[in-house]
Image (cartoon, rainbow, N blue to C red):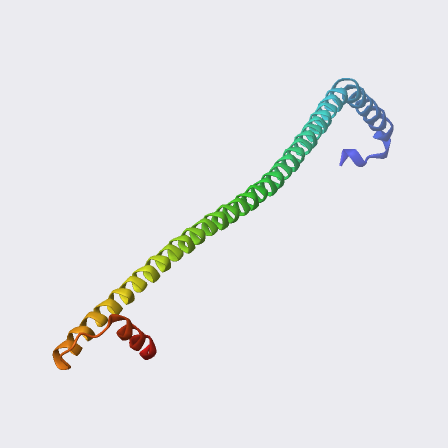
Length: 159
């Protein structure tokens, strides 16, 4: 193998150094700056994307907080309105119930007065009818006219 021939080592080392030097110069001057630029651009794009994602996350968290606080406020306002409506309903129903009870008591009192008056009239009419019947019975059976005063006194004793 000619590569392992010690007499050609010096020329092989020269061409090796020259080739690697040229390759190093070409890579460091032309290719590595382009690769470095691409990597830096990629890194800046990634960082910009991450910054934008953080901004959107912060915006979303802020919107979520606003939503939750609005929902909480709405729930508490709704509960307050429901409580006020329930109190108003209770108050109105109590007033209506009191009005109806008062109306019923008034009608009941009127009915009791009317019933009492009718009963007293019926009793008075029954007393007069019983006096008339008693006078007729005494006249028919005993044959004389009974005094209405004495019959009234007798009727009051029976009561």
